[in-house]
Length: 320
Image (cartoon, rainbow, N blue to C red; front, side, top):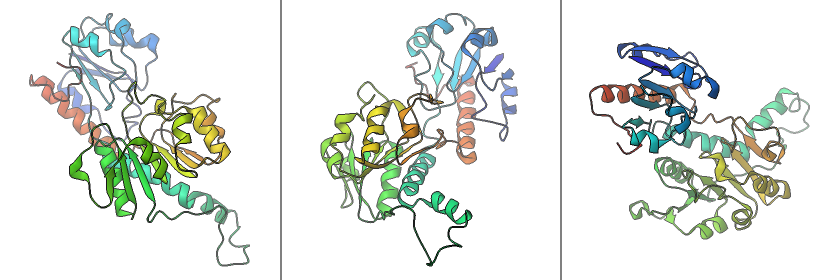
């Protein structure tokens, strides 16, 4: 059996192993695959493994031997699920592997905006503390989170984990979701309409899937309803933002700061307005990239393979 991994590098740049695939067939690992090489590399393959390489109808129609697609991600928008369903090809994803890591990164971004640890460390290493007349100094206003209001948009596993951390830090949590979960309500967490969340939250953090309803949800109207001087955090999906509108809000001072781990186009174009916006921290889609997190991803991938070969696929996302 021929197995092809199209874009394996980000999942495993060399600190994990693909050797376990050998028990299922002959496998070839490509770090990256440009669109023009997909059909050539996958010719005769019964199993294709992909993360971000798009397998649309045009490509899939040229892969008649394909029987199984394994994703190295939770999202599955890179696959034409209608085509695979029509042809009985199960598509399996990796669910819930990065919940703790993304929640952690959400607060890494927020704390950097509030405490500017990196900025001050660089200042100390430049000799500014050694030359200071006082025992301490700060180069930017610092913000304490105690008793602030944290707004969570989307309340899946990651949103729930983020809310738990916010409460542990002494914050009050407001949640907007189309599907409230009353069992989570308590004195520190309340489900509210979106406009109320925006008006009252000192921090707004996105944890929603990308759908037609959430695409460019964070636009000028959305930002205009936010509390003056609030922070915006996005570790969900880049296209949920109108990036020009967010940049304008940052540059005008409407937003005090923003922390992003995702952008609408990745890698970003040099013209992306967030790259030059004031008080905007951007990390290169790394919330999921810790070794422990990727090891968990690999474990679920192995489970998906074992289940497929047992005749009972799990984590199937295309309705088969």
